[in-house]
Length: 364
Image 1 (spheres, rainbow, N blue to C red):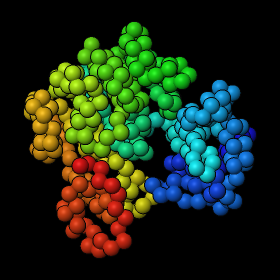
Image 2 (cartoon, one colour; image 1 turned 90 degrees about the horizontal axis):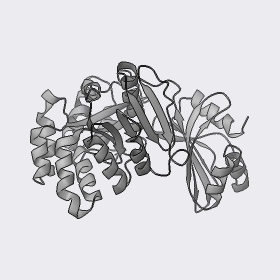
Image 3 (spheres, rainbow, N blue to C red; image 1 turned 60 degrees about the horizontal axis):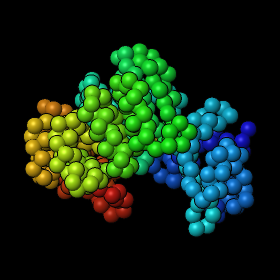
Image 4 (cartoon, rainbow, N blue to C red; image 1 turned 30 degrees about the vertical axis):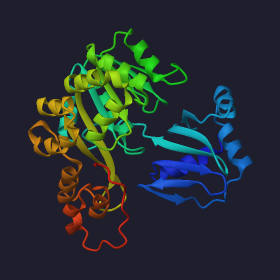
């Protein structure tokens, strides 16, 4: 058994989402959003490197020793699955292990709005799940893929970095390909996928102009494309895509977004009232004619007002979703205040604002 497995086993037993290892500090567990040190000595450079090299393949080790950060998936001795990032910093090397549940949660178990399931029933176009790092985007996408896998007979091709949730083919065929192992780039993966008779293509991260462009082409040519972006609102998502592509393609990009973008689901994870769990709270934009017109006429700043009025389409602003969850006693009001865009609406829930740890606004 690899020595790092002891820390991973401890973390999973306590319900942590991540294990952090770094030179000069003890191992740290992320528990319900907060970092907590393990009762262990400060890790030394040689000790930590030996822990990590023990679980890396020769090709991974060479890639890392060539000066690159590396992402890979790891299965511990007791069957736990983790997404791993190994990196260098000023004081030495470090690593982050993200625990991947063995069971893929359903959309209902995640308590996502019902409209998310309806979005999956589209046969072509693009659905984006966005949010900051660590907000559960991969889990939401895994639940969406599992719903499609269970309910329709499709060819689903998933491009990931690395493969996280493992999908067993049910009603559909699910093909999972990993960046660096099976494909050199996401853009190349999308290009190859379009020659493999896909119905659904999942792009793990749309991180550059070429990948975004290829994903748009796939969505325009009769495929359902699911993807992620590190943006914190529907408006910022639209602006990010337009800004990412060359200026001469601006009008074409806006036309695509107005016609082929189905929806943007932006999420944050907010602690429950007992502070021992976290719940995904979503801003949802479903692209209709009104939003398409705002995109085409460079008036994306008016999108929030459309979300506020678009309840019949399943739309909601993040602040609306936070207020609803507070009323249902599903999230902690002080935590919600930290994520709110217009904090004035939330001050009545947090009468004493001294000592409230404010998160970065996630919807503005």
